Image 1: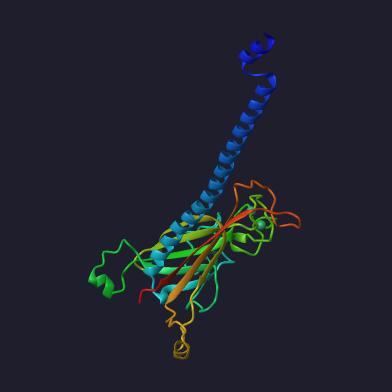
Image 2 (image 1 turned 60 degrees about the vertical axis):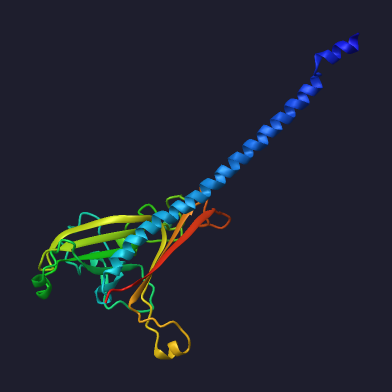
Length: 278
Ligand SMILES: [Ca+2]
Ligand SMILES: [Ca+2]
């Protein structure tokens, strides 16, 4: 009688414990799978987002450079740039060192991190008379790289780089990336005399920029071409932007700026080659 009653009761205490243990294990494993895959996705998404943002900025730069003539493109030595207030940036002439030192013609086969070029201003009416008399308005565009303001060598603004900022191999802002920088842009429009500044604008185009590189390749000689090398006439400019962020999946607050420290980084490079208008 007793054994029949036990059978009707269905589950013993041990069976219940085992069943709930198995259930807990299954739920635990499946939640871990969902959790880890979502972390993986967020890491991949961060990389895609980093690259997309950079590509947008690069595309604008490419479109502008496509309209520029090679003779109107200069390398910019960026170290003397000082565009922080209280300087009257709008009163400064184009050749003031506080806006960078332009080197024209641009040196070939040299890597540089600042560029300046002239474009025809969109305010022009494109009348034939204006064109004949060289009265078209021009816009000067300049791009350069500088260290992020919270990433510079201390004491601040006393270094050797643009705006007194200097990279020094340390992660000063504790975002996991050593000497992260920004891509800066200056746009100057002039009056008809091409000297008086109509408007001058500064903007930060892109963050998380580790390196910005421009290069105008030297023309290949006929000997090179005969040797099977591609025939470049040098009327082109190569642009590449290196980006770096800390992998959000890892969530580490240490970086490789000291022995024994490490960080997991997401790195991307976007690049383009632009043929100048002739
Ligand atoms: Ca940093
Ligand atoms: Ca630094």
